[in-house]
Length: 141
Image 1 (cartoon, one colour):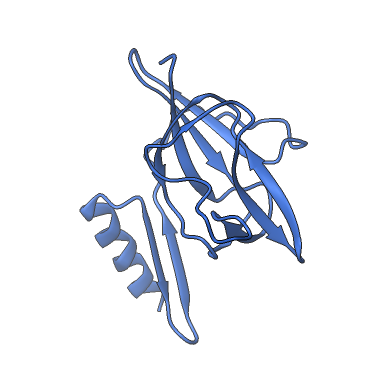
Image 2 (cartoon, helix red, strand yellow):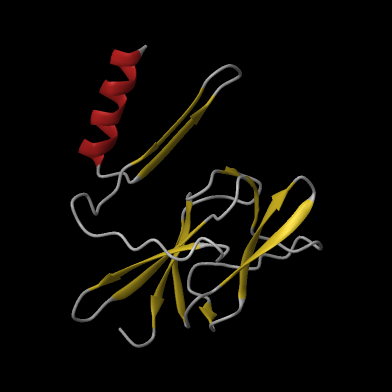
């Protein structure tokens, strides 16, 4: 099985996919390929609910929103309305999603103002500590 997983990782890398998830009744394989191998990574104060890593170029400033908990990702509110969608403009402090842990909802707020440029997980997905949830491109890139 290890050889098959290594082969699968190679295929995922070749295709340029950053995240791959396979689920069956008895197997779950989650592969996340970092595009920043060898670069410095910013780890925020652990008292903050979500992990933030900034990627700065001359014209782009992306902020990665990561889970600060192990739980169930909630991208919609109690009424089923999506909280975050790609292209949505957000302000610092806006609720982006929540992580449900043992029935308790922990809100994840935006650390910056900007536009949601990618959402990498689905509503109801199980997330681990540090799982990349979404990316925001800031207005002041």
